[in-house]
Amino acid sequence: MEPIHMVDLIGQHAAIENELNVAMQRVVKTGAFVKGPEVKAFSEELQTYTGSRFVIPCGNGTDALQIALMALGVGPGDEVITTGFTFISTVEVVALLGATPVLVDVHPDTFNINTEQVAAAITPRTKAIVPVHLFGQMADMDALLALSEKSGVPLIEDNAQAISARWYGAKGKRKNAPQSGTLGLMGTTSFFPSKNLGCMGDGGAIMTNDETIARRLQQIANHGMSKRYHHDVVGLNSRLDGMQAAILRVKLQYLDAYCAARQEAAARYDTLLKDIPGIQIPSRDLRSSHVFHQYTLQVDPDHRDALVEQMKANGIPTGVYYPVPGHRQKAFSTFGFSIEAYPVSDALAARVISLPMHTELTKSQQHTICDTLIKFVKQ
Ligand SMILES: *Cc1c(COP(=O)(O)O)cnc(C)c1O
Image (cartoon, rainbow, N blue to C red; front, side, top):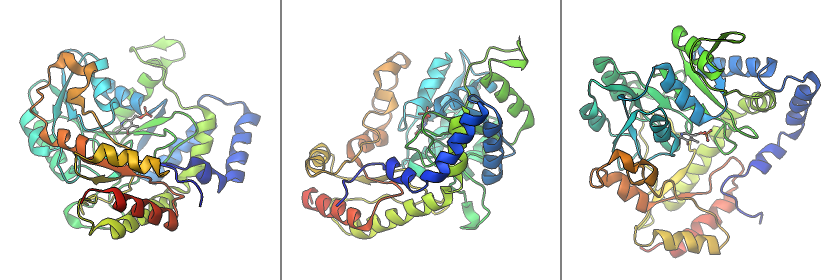
């Protein structure tokens, strides 16, 4: 059997090698390496795909978050509410801008932000709420949109892990439900290679339906420039390059198929693992689709690390996302987060284990993974 990978980009790209080569050659021949026609075309295609009025491409998903906060003027004295059970970027950019990250806990079933705690954390200094659609399933957008409307605090969706997910809400599953990243004032995403829509380097984008915000985002991402060499605000150099855009244009056409493959793999894992004592399969919030950036189980925290080692010894990679929640990160120690205030994040950090999840995963690989897991899991 082929070796099992956590993510298999080589396999994914081999299947569309000719199209990728044609796209990359096009960039070489035109010489438009930074920004240029491929980037413009990709932005437009992503607008059409997501239904977002504006897509502003940028250098990576971390920059996307930073630029979004900068567009709201977030700085010292301001507070931004988010969760610490996420990749570091979500909290890091708040700190980088000199503002104060206000962390709230997550739900034990969906891993997503606890919206009652968000409501309680809003103060006159709150400048933004940043829900993360963790592992490919959306945070409770009905509650968050209601909170945003009531308080006037804008939402920035960190959509790095859930591009193409849909929010069904109370109306239930339907085809044209709004996509993740398009419900808040802004949505950010990442095209890091291992993300659901990945390029071959770094890339990111910000989405918005607000024209004024779109203009501001564009300007900030390009040195605060309005007219060539006229800089109205302090910005940054965060651009998508032509090669990445050309690659993304090819892969965007397969994004629905990639999501379907992930969902199929997740359903198979569910079937194989749902009745095994000692294993808790990921729960679904039926108000959102789930695009399975990760397939994350919960196991006995006393045996989780041993399980990771045993899987590894048997040739099966797994991941722990995330072992250290934001409130325990040394880099954020100056914010004085309470160690007792995040029991769910702490419990999850000790209990989670993510299985290989990608578009090339085979049935037989999944059987091997689950057989091995079941053998070692403490029941
Ligand atoms: C990957 C990721 C980011 C950052 O994206 P980069 O392109 O790596 O900078 C931000 N937030 C979340 C939740 C992510 O998973």
